Amino acid sequence: MKNNDLRTLTRLALLVAIELVMKAIGLGSVPVGPLYMSFLTLPIAVGAITMGPAAGAILGGVFGAVSFYDAVTGASAMTGALFQVSPVNTFILCVGMRVLMGVCVGLIFNAIKGLDKAGTWSYLISAMCAPALNTLFFMGYIVLAFYSCAASYKHLRAHETKANLVCRLQIEKKT
Image 1: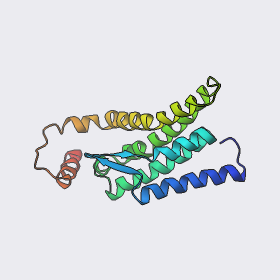
Image 2 (image 1 turned 45 degrees about the vertical axis):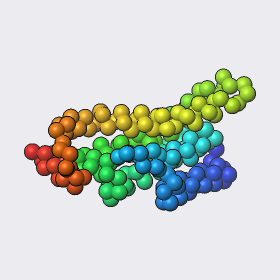
Image 3 (image 1 turned 135 degrees about the horizontal axis):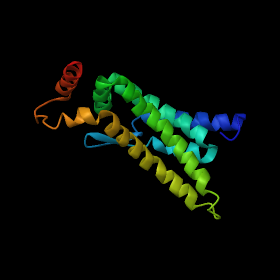
């Protein structure tokens, strides 16, 4: 963060509150097939752009903690199944990738703001990088950490439920 004065901490707390309220009332994500399109990157982008990479990391950590909570409780089918396979990799996926996204958005803004004399397109590009980087890091880490597990499930049957899939993941993990 640029400085630790009361105003900066208040802004950060407000963005954390906005992120938590968005998640709690359902404005944070929209279901698109089996996945969710997340709007929780918006407060992260605002914080990273206005207060720097450290604020982006803190806000990304909040998003990641909420996402990891969903994985542990089973509120998210996909991360819940991944949690059954590897809790450590799921924690890195949920928290680590979101922290990394927040830091990168702040660093991208800092790198390009000097090139933007009018001060318009650097904000737009940095804000658009937040969901793009979130998707890139999240899906990229799924491929890196869980590919061997996913590759063995190309023979899934159409009638299997999420509960059966989790049971199969647990059984095959132990063998």
